[in-house]
Image 1 (cartoon, helix red, strand yellow):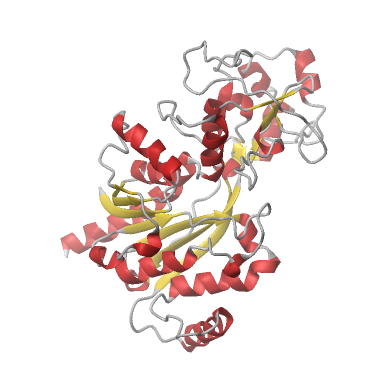
Image 2 (cartoon, one colour):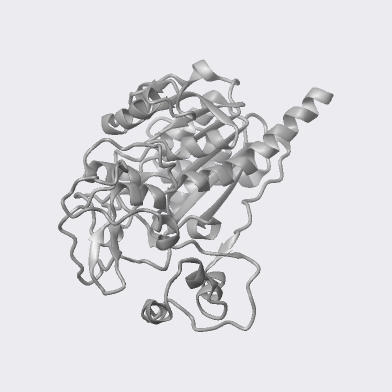
Length: 394
């Protein structure tokens, strides 16, 4: 098991996935008390991945990372995304919640072999393009720090000059960035996020993001030309007709795509019973309770049953309805239960969210899909393991 540090852990989605990929966190840092309670609850219940987690419920700005210097294989985390999200205030570098400077500080002080950071796709928008490049260059050259009273864009310009000079004395990383759609990797959710992955330059690693394994076209094939999707779910031909009225579905394709089909909401939750309208989890499934109040209106129309879900969102003012609703074939809508939302984020069923529905959905809306974290983490761990074996032989 390789050693790591998890920053901005949230409810633990990224950490769970990286644990499955072979990384064990020496320390897990999160300041939100509700998220910390979720981690503690699952740790105390004996969740295998979290059993040995050392949780530090603290603001990363108050921590001295130098105690971990040169001892970790990986740093990971999802810095708060509100400064860059579509639903946020778009303040970016003027937002006190921008924690990328702390992520860079952790990399600079610890000098890990590699890092994985995740954020919202909004960070790649034209409005933030210069700041996105600024973050990338800081992660590439973490020891080229801002001078006293130096403005970020002046520091950015200095980093650009250093980068183009070709000098590589000191600590430097080869950084690769990419926007990934979770659905393209078998997650039943159209969740687009940008990832920053870096390896110390001295390691000489030539790394690329894993290839997508699932596609929309393959789902269309299964639902149209092939029809195996409906057979698998025992859907009658009359119901298939109604399900295919959505403009998202193509009628036919000339050949079967090479990828696997996107996973749908139905794929994710078909074995769960309908939540009881009384609000009680009579099924005995934790968190599978009906939540009243779902309404559909322009721009908030919910997720179709036979397509990957829209990206779950935490929202700025409570839980946004459209992203966290299911649309039934008759057009009626209801909120996803907590357990259904956890399935969409690929948390294991034994993982519990014990807060209120709105708080649990906030944590889920901020999480990294566990299985996506595993896929990315495994591709990083393979590279690091190869290097460790090579060093051992030498």
